[in-house]
Amino acid sequence: MSLFVSAIGQGLLWAVLGVGLFLTFRILDFADMTVEGTFPLGAATAVAAISNGMNPMLATLLAFGIGAIAGLITGLLYTKGHIPILLAGILVMTACYSVNLRIMGRANVSLLGKSTLFKNHFLASLPQYFDSVFLGTLVMVVITGLVIYFLQTQLGQGFIATGDNQTMARSLGINTDNMKIMGLMVSNGLIAFGGALVAQNNGYADVNMGIGIIVIALASIIIGEVAFGDLTLNQRLVAVTLGSILYRFVLLIVLKLGFSANDLNLLSSIILALCMMLPVFKKTLNFKHILKRGLDTND
Image 1 (cartoon, rainbow, N blue to C red):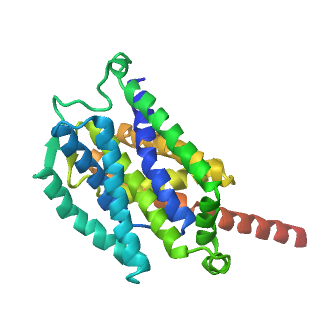
Image 2: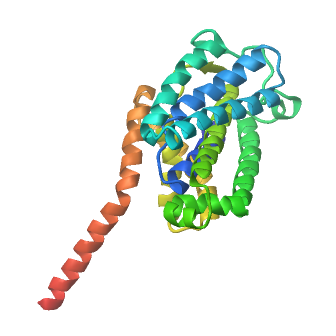
Image 3: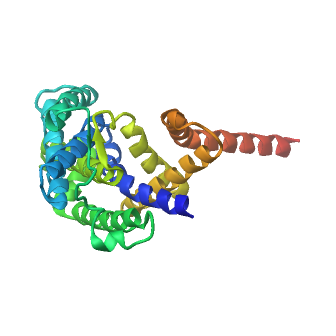
C-alpha cells in the first residue's frame, strides 16, 4: 500500500514537468532541450536558498523565476540569434551545469535539518507518503487550472495559433517570436518549479539530477495521450498528470520484476519509444485486418 501511495505522490510531483514540456512540445511543436538544465537549476536554486534561511515557498517561486530566465535566453538565441531550437536548448542546458555548481558551491547539497514545503505540522500529521500526494494534488490543480485559464485568454489563443500555423498567426498581427519566447519562459519556469519540489521531497539537490528529465516529461505526455485517446486541449492537460502517475506505476512494476534501478533510464526510453510507436502498430494491424477481410471477400 505504501508503494502505491508513493507512486501516486511521485507521479503528481513529476507531472509539473509534463505540463511544462507540453507547452513547447505539443503547442509550439518543438522539443526544448533546455529542460535538462532548468530542472536541476530549479532544484539548486531552491536548495541553496533554503540552506541560507529563505522561506521554502519563496525559494520555490524563486526557482520558477530563475527557470524562466533560462527559458528567456533560449528563446532569444532561437528567435533573435536564429540558432536552431535544438542547439539553442543544448547551449543553455550546458551552461546551466556550471551555473548550478556556482549556485550550490559543490555537486550535491543536502536539506537535512532544513525546513521545506514538506515539513510542516499538517503534512507531518499525515500517513507516510501522503504528504507528497496532498501537496502534489494541490500544486497540479493550481498549475493546470492556471494554464487552462491562460490558454482561453486572447494571449493564450495567440500562443496556440503560433504553434498551429506561424504564417497565419503573423497575418493576424501576432508577434510569433514573442509567443515563442513567452512559451519557453513559462515552460522552463514550470520545469524549474518541478525541480524545486522534487529536490525538497528528496531532501537534496544534485547537479546531475537533470539527466534524462526530458524523457520522463515526454513519458507523462505520451502515456496520457495513448491511455485516454482523443481529447480536447484542456483534457489533454489533465491527462498529462494521469500519464505521469501511470508512468510511475509502470516503473514500480518494472522494479518489482527484479530490474535494477540503474536500468530505469534505459527502460524509460524503451517504454516511451513503444508508446510513441503505438499509432504505427495500430495502423499496421488495421491495414492487415482490412487486407485480410478484402481477401476473404474476394474468395
